[in-house]
Length: 353
Image 1 (cartoon, rainbow, N blue to C red):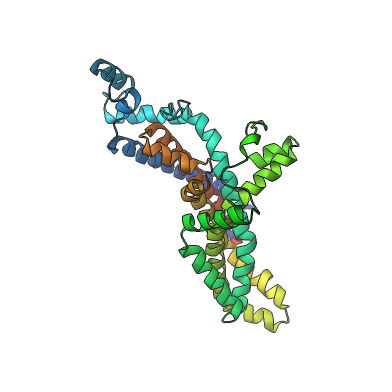
Image 2: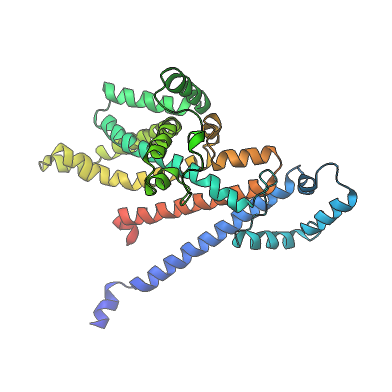
Protein backbone atom coordinates (compact mmCIF):
# COMPACT_ATOMS: atom_id res chain seq x y z
CA UNK A 1 0.00 0.00 0.00
CA UNK A 2 2.84 2.35 0.87
CA UNK A 3 4.66 1.55 -2.34
CA UNK A 4 1.54 2.26 -4.38
CA UNK A 5 1.02 5.60 -2.64
CA UNK A 6 4.63 6.59 -3.21
CA UNK A 7 4.48 5.60 -6.84
CA UNK A 8 1.20 7.44 -7.40
CA UNK A 9 2.80 10.85 -7.25
CA UNK A 10 6.52 10.67 -7.89
CA UNK A 11 8.42 13.81 -6.93
CA UNK A 12 5.36 15.44 -5.34
CA UNK A 13 5.42 16.46 -1.69
CA UNK A 14 2.68 15.22 0.66
CA UNK A 15 -0.13 17.63 1.52
CA UNK A 16 1.23 18.71 4.94
CA UNK A 17 4.77 19.65 3.78
CA UNK A 18 3.34 21.45 0.76
CA UNK A 19 1.00 23.46 2.99
CA UNK A 20 3.88 24.26 5.35
CA UNK A 21 6.08 25.33 2.45
CA UNK A 22 3.30 27.57 1.07
CA UNK A 23 2.74 29.13 4.51
CA UNK A 24 6.45 29.76 4.97
CA UNK A 25 6.61 31.38 1.54
CA UNK A 26 3.65 33.62 2.33
CA UNK A 27 5.16 34.68 5.68
CA UNK A 28 8.53 35.40 4.05
CA UNK A 29 6.84 37.45 1.35
CA UNK A 30 4.90 39.40 3.98
CA UNK A 31 8.05 40.11 6.01
CA UNK A 32 10.02 41.27 2.96
CA UNK A 33 7.14 43.47 1.81
CA UNK A 34 6.85 45.01 5.27
CA UNK A 35 10.59 45.69 5.42
CA UNK A 36 10.46 47.24 1.95
CA UNK A 37 7.50 49.43 2.94
CA UNK A 38 9.18 50.65 6.12
CA UNK A 39 12.45 51.27 4.27
CA UNK A 40 10.68 53.40 1.66
CA UNK A 41 8.82 55.47 4.26
CA UNK A 42 12.06 55.90 6.24
CA UNK A 43 13.91 57.18 3.17
CA UNK A 44 11.03 59.52 2.31
CA UNK A 45 11.18 60.95 5.82
CA UNK A 46 14.91 61.61 5.44
CA UNK A 47 14.91 63.15 1.95
CA UNK A 48 11.98 65.49 2.56
CA UNK A 49 13.11 69.14 2.54
CA UNK A 50 11.23 69.82 5.78
CA UNK A 51 13.46 69.79 8.88
CA UNK A 52 11.86 67.46 11.47
CA UNK A 53 13.61 69.29 14.31
CA UNK A 54 12.30 72.70 13.25
CA UNK A 55 8.84 71.20 12.94
CA UNK A 56 9.06 70.35 16.66
CA UNK A 57 10.85 73.33 18.16
CA UNK A 58 9.74 76.05 15.73
CA UNK A 59 11.70 78.60 13.69
CA UNK A 60 12.53 80.83 16.65
CA UNK A 61 14.04 78.16 18.89
CA UNK A 62 17.54 78.65 20.25
CA UNK A 63 20.51 76.66 19.01
CA UNK A 64 20.65 74.86 22.34
CA UNK A 65 17.03 73.74 22.09
CA UNK A 66 17.58 72.68 18.48
CA UNK A 67 20.59 70.52 19.37
CA UNK A 68 18.79 68.97 22.33
CA UNK A 69 15.81 67.86 20.20
CA UNK A 70 18.20 66.79 17.43
CA UNK A 71 19.90 64.38 19.84
CA UNK A 72 16.59 63.21 21.36
CA UNK A 73 15.33 62.25 17.91
CA UNK A 74 18.50 60.22 17.29
CA UNK A 75 19.39 62.14 14.14
CA UNK A 76 23.07 62.10 15.12
CA UNK A 77 23.17 58.30 14.77
CA UNK A 78 24.09 56.41 11.56
CA UNK A 79 21.26 55.81 9.11
CA UNK A 80 21.09 52.07 9.77
CA UNK A 81 20.78 52.77 13.51
CA UNK A 82 18.02 55.30 12.85
CA UNK A 83 16.21 52.78 10.65
CA UNK A 84 16.38 50.04 13.29
CA UNK A 85 15.02 52.46 15.86
CA UNK A 86 12.27 53.50 13.44
CA UNK A 87 11.43 49.85 12.74
CA UNK A 88 11.24 49.06 16.45
CA UNK A 89 8.84 51.97 17.02
CA UNK A 90 6.58 50.77 14.21
CA UNK A 91 6.51 47.21 15.56
CA UNK A 92 5.37 48.55 18.93
CA UNK A 93 2.78 50.85 17.32
CA UNK A 94 4.66 53.99 18.30
CA UNK A 95 4.63 56.50 15.44
CA UNK A 96 5.43 59.41 17.71
CA UNK A 97 3.26 62.45 18.38
CA UNK A 98 1.57 64.56 15.74
CA UNK A 99 2.70 68.17 15.65
CA UNK A 100 -0.60 69.25 14.14
CA UNK A 101 -2.96 67.62 16.68
CA UNK A 102 -0.46 67.16 19.58
CA UNK A 103 -1.88 63.66 20.06
CA UNK A 104 -0.10 60.35 19.46
CA UNK A 105 -0.23 59.45 15.76
CA UNK A 106 -1.63 56.01 16.63
CA UNK A 107 -4.56 57.68 18.36
CA UNK A 108 -5.17 59.90 15.34
CA UNK A 109 -5.08 56.92 12.98
CA UNK A 110 -7.60 55.04 15.12
CA UNK A 111 -9.82 58.10 14.88
CA UNK A 112 -9.50 58.90 11.17
CA UNK A 113 -8.97 55.53 9.49
CA UNK A 114 -12.43 54.04 10.33
CA UNK A 115 -14.07 56.93 8.44
CA UNK A 116 -12.12 56.04 5.28
CA UNK A 117 -12.76 52.34 5.85
CA UNK A 118 -16.50 52.98 6.12
CA UNK A 119 -16.57 55.10 2.97
CA UNK A 120 -14.40 52.79 0.84
CA UNK A 121 -16.25 49.65 1.96
CA UNK A 122 -19.68 50.98 1.02
CA UNK A 123 -18.36 52.36 -2.29
CA UNK A 124 -16.79 48.99 -3.16
CA UNK A 125 -19.96 47.11 -2.21
CA UNK A 126 -22.03 49.43 -4.40
CA UNK A 127 -19.57 48.98 -7.25
CA UNK A 128 -19.75 45.18 -6.97
CA UNK A 129 -23.51 44.87 -6.52
CA UNK A 130 -24.26 47.14 -9.48
CA UNK A 131 -21.14 46.89 -11.63
CA UNK A 132 -20.89 43.10 -11.89
CA UNK A 133 -24.48 42.52 -13.15
CA UNK A 134 -24.08 45.48 -15.51
CA UNK A 135 -20.87 44.05 -16.94
CA UNK A 136 -22.41 40.61 -17.40
CA UNK A 137 -25.52 42.10 -19.01
CA UNK A 138 -23.41 44.20 -21.38
CA UNK A 139 -21.32 41.19 -22.44
CA UNK A 140 -24.38 39.03 -23.07
CA UNK A 141 -25.92 41.84 -25.16
CA UNK A 142 -22.75 42.82 -26.99
CA UNK A 143 -23.31 45.52 -29.60
CA UNK A 144 -26.80 46.42 -28.37
CA UNK A 145 -27.91 49.61 -26.64
CA UNK A 146 -27.32 48.26 -23.12
CA UNK A 147 -23.74 47.39 -24.04
CA UNK A 148 -23.15 50.92 -25.35
CA UNK A 149 -24.78 52.43 -22.25
CA UNK A 150 -22.54 50.46 -19.90
CA UNK A 151 -19.45 51.41 -21.88
CA UNK A 152 -20.40 55.10 -21.81
CA UNK A 153 -21.07 54.91 -18.06
CA UNK A 154 -17.70 53.23 -17.56
CA UNK A 155 -15.96 55.92 -19.56
CA UNK A 156 -17.75 58.66 -17.61
CA UNK A 157 -16.87 57.10 -14.28
CA UNK A 158 -13.22 57.06 -15.31
CA UNK A 159 -12.95 60.45 -16.98
CA UNK A 160 -15.13 62.79 -14.89
CA UNK A 161 -12.98 64.44 -12.18
CA UNK A 162 -13.97 63.36 -8.68
CA UNK A 163 -13.83 66.87 -7.22
CA UNK A 164 -16.10 68.26 -9.96
CA UNK A 165 -18.61 65.44 -9.56
CA UNK A 166 -18.59 65.89 -5.80
CA UNK A 167 -19.19 69.63 -5.97
CA UNK A 168 -21.99 69.24 -8.53
CA UNK A 169 -23.58 66.57 -6.33
CA UNK A 170 -23.45 68.88 -3.32
CA UNK A 171 -24.92 71.76 -5.32
CA UNK A 172 -27.80 69.76 -6.78
CA UNK A 173 -28.77 67.15 -4.19
CA UNK A 174 -27.83 69.06 -1.03
CA UNK A 175 -27.99 72.75 -1.93
CA UNK A 176 -30.97 72.82 -4.33
CA UNK A 177 -33.03 69.70 -3.68
CA UNK A 178 -32.12 69.04 -0.04
CA UNK A 179 -32.40 65.27 -0.50
CA UNK A 180 -29.23 64.42 1.41
CA UNK A 181 -27.11 65.91 4.17
CA UNK A 182 -24.11 68.07 3.37
CA UNK A 183 -20.38 67.88 4.11
CA UNK A 184 -19.07 66.15 7.18
CA UNK A 185 -19.60 62.74 8.66
CA UNK A 186 -22.52 63.72 10.89
CA UNK A 187 -24.44 66.84 11.94
CA UNK A 188 -22.48 68.86 14.46
CA UNK A 189 -25.13 68.62 17.18
CA UNK A 190 -24.82 64.81 17.11
CA UNK A 191 -21.05 64.91 17.49
CA UNK A 192 -19.94 63.08 20.63
CA UNK A 193 -23.37 61.62 21.42
CA UNK A 194 -22.40 58.12 20.32
CA UNK A 195 -19.51 56.46 22.14
CA UNK A 196 -16.82 55.26 19.75
CA UNK A 197 -16.47 51.47 19.89
CA UNK A 198 -15.42 50.48 16.38
CA UNK A 199 -14.92 53.99 14.99
CA UNK A 200 -17.45 53.23 12.25
CA UNK A 201 -20.34 55.50 13.13
CA UNK A 202 -23.00 53.39 11.38
CA UNK A 203 -22.06 50.35 13.48
CA UNK A 204 -21.61 52.28 16.73
CA UNK A 205 -24.93 54.12 16.46
CA UNK A 206 -26.77 50.89 15.57
CA UNK A 207 -25.19 49.00 18.49
CA UNK A 208 -26.25 51.73 20.90
CA UNK A 209 -29.75 52.04 19.47
CA UNK A 210 -29.27 55.65 18.31
CA UNK A 211 -31.28 55.25 15.11
CA UNK A 212 -31.77 58.96 14.52
CA UNK A 213 -27.99 59.39 14.46
CA UNK A 214 -27.68 56.27 12.30
CA UNK A 215 -29.95 57.66 9.58
CA UNK A 216 -28.29 61.07 9.83
CA UNK A 217 -24.93 59.37 9.18
CA UNK A 218 -26.45 57.47 6.25
CA UNK A 219 -27.67 60.76 4.77
CA UNK A 220 -24.17 62.22 5.05
CA UNK A 221 -22.64 59.09 3.54
CA UNK A 222 -24.81 58.85 0.42
CA UNK A 223 -23.08 61.48 -1.71
CA UNK A 224 -19.40 60.68 -1.02
CA UNK A 225 -20.06 56.94 -1.24
CA UNK A 226 -21.90 57.47 -4.54
CA UNK A 227 -19.01 59.48 -6.01
CA UNK A 228 -16.45 56.85 -5.02
CA UNK A 229 -18.88 54.08 -5.93
CA UNK A 230 -19.22 55.44 -9.46
CA UNK A 231 -15.48 55.02 -9.98
CA UNK A 232 -15.56 51.48 -8.56
CA UNK A 233 -18.67 50.64 -10.58
CA UNK A 234 -17.14 51.89 -13.82
CA UNK A 235 -13.93 49.91 -13.38
CA UNK A 236 -15.58 46.69 -12.20
CA UNK A 237 -18.28 46.84 -14.90
CA UNK A 238 -15.71 47.34 -17.68
CA UNK A 239 -13.49 44.53 -16.45
CA UNK A 240 -16.46 42.18 -15.93
CA UNK A 241 -17.64 42.85 -19.48
CA UNK A 242 -14.17 42.18 -20.87
CA UNK A 243 -13.75 38.94 -18.91
CA UNK A 244 -17.23 37.71 -19.81
CA UNK A 245 -16.74 38.38 -23.51
CA UNK A 246 -13.59 36.29 -23.41
CA UNK A 247 -15.34 33.40 -21.63
CA UNK A 248 -18.49 33.48 -23.75
CA UNK A 249 -16.36 32.87 -26.82
CA UNK A 250 -14.82 29.68 -25.41
CA UNK A 251 -15.66 26.23 -26.70
CA UNK A 252 -17.00 24.93 -23.38
CA UNK A 253 -19.76 27.55 -23.55
CA UNK A 254 -20.76 26.27 -26.99
CA UNK A 255 -20.70 22.70 -25.66
CA UNK A 256 -22.95 23.66 -22.73
CA UNK A 257 -25.47 25.24 -25.09
CA UNK A 258 -25.42 22.19 -27.40
CA UNK A 259 -26.15 19.97 -24.39
CA UNK A 260 -29.29 22.03 -23.75
CA UNK A 261 -28.20 24.05 -20.72
CA UNK A 262 -30.37 27.09 -20.02
CA UNK A 263 -28.99 30.51 -20.87
CA UNK A 264 -29.02 31.44 -17.17
CA UNK A 265 -26.93 28.36 -16.37
CA UNK A 266 -24.54 29.03 -19.24
CA UNK A 267 -23.95 32.62 -18.13
CA UNK A 268 -23.85 32.37 -14.34
CA UNK A 269 -22.88 28.75 -13.68
CA UNK A 270 -20.31 28.22 -16.41
CA UNK A 271 -18.97 31.54 -17.70
CA UNK A 272 -19.23 33.66 -14.55
CA UNK A 273 -17.59 31.03 -12.32
CA UNK A 274 -14.43 31.35 -14.40
CA UNK A 275 -14.73 35.14 -14.45
CA UNK A 276 -15.07 35.25 -10.66
CA UNK A 277 -11.48 34.11 -10.23
CA UNK A 278 -10.22 37.15 -12.14
CA UNK A 279 -12.73 39.51 -10.55
CA UNK A 280 -11.46 38.75 -7.05
CA UNK A 281 -8.16 40.42 -7.90
CA UNK A 282 -9.90 43.37 -9.56
CA UNK A 283 -12.20 43.94 -6.56
CA UNK A 284 -9.28 43.70 -4.15
CA UNK A 285 -7.26 46.26 -6.08
CA UNK A 286 -10.28 48.55 -6.35
CA UNK A 287 -10.91 48.38 -2.61
CA UNK A 288 -7.25 49.06 -1.81
CA UNK A 289 -7.12 52.00 -4.22
CA UNK A 290 -10.21 53.54 -2.61
CA UNK A 291 -8.65 53.20 0.83
CA UNK A 292 -5.53 55.07 -0.23
CA UNK A 293 -6.83 57.33 -2.98
CA UNK A 294 -10.00 58.91 -1.61
CA UNK A 295 -8.31 62.15 -0.55
CA UNK A 296 -10.13 64.32 -3.13
CA UNK A 297 -13.51 62.95 -2.10
CA UNK A 298 -12.67 63.46 1.57
CA UNK A 299 -11.57 67.03 0.87
CA UNK A 300 -14.69 67.97 -1.11
CA UNK A 301 -17.06 66.46 1.45
CA UNK A 302 -15.03 67.48 4.54
CA UNK A 303 -14.84 63.79 5.41
CA UNK A 304 -12.44 63.20 8.33
CA UNK A 305 -10.59 60.26 6.77
CA UNK A 306 -7.02 59.06 6.66
CA UNK A 307 -6.36 60.53 3.21
CA UNK A 308 -7.24 64.06 4.29
CA UNK A 309 -5.28 63.53 7.52
CA UNK A 310 -2.10 62.53 5.65
CA UNK A 311 -2.45 65.36 3.12
CA UNK A 312 -3.03 68.03 5.77
CA UNK A 313 -0.12 66.67 7.79
CA UNK A 314 2.13 66.83 4.73
CA UNK A 315 1.26 70.48 4.13
CA UNK A 316 2.13 71.20 7.78
CA UNK A 317 5.43 69.24 7.66
CA UNK A 318 4.07 66.81 10.26
CA UNK A 319 6.23 63.88 9.17
CA UNK A 320 5.30 61.58 12.06
CA UNK A 321 1.67 61.71 10.96
CA UNK A 322 2.55 61.36 7.27
CA UNK A 323 4.80 58.34 7.77
CA UNK A 324 2.45 56.70 10.27
CA UNK A 325 -0.55 57.07 7.98
CA UNK A 326 1.44 55.88 4.97
CA UNK A 327 2.63 52.75 6.80
CA UNK A 328 -0.91 51.90 7.91
CA UNK A 329 -2.34 52.35 4.41
CA UNK A 330 0.52 50.28 2.98
CA UNK A 331 -0.12 47.48 5.47
CA UNK A 332 -3.81 47.50 4.52
CA UNK A 333 -2.88 47.30 0.84
CA UNK A 334 -0.63 44.30 1.48
CA UNK A 335 -3.31 42.67 3.65
CA UNK A 336 -5.98 43.08 0.99
CA UNK A 337 -3.69 41.57 -1.64
CA UNK A 338 -2.99 38.58 0.61
CA UNK A 339 -6.73 38.15 1.21
CA UNK A 340 -7.30 38.28 -2.55
CA UNK A 341 -4.71 35.55 -3.05
CA UNK A 342 -6.45 33.40 -0.43
CA UNK A 343 -9.88 33.89 -2.01
CA UNK A 344 -8.34 33.18 -5.41
CA UNK A 345 -7.19 29.77 -4.19
CA UNK A 346 -10.61 29.05 -2.71
CA UNK A 347 -12.39 30.01 -5.93
CA UNK A 348 -10.03 28.20 -8.32
CA UNK A 349 -9.47 24.49 -7.58
CA UNK A 350 -6.41 24.49 -9.84
CA UNK A 351 -4.63 26.88 -7.46
CA UNK A 352 -5.08 24.41 -4.59
CA UNK A 353 -3.50 21.53 -6.49
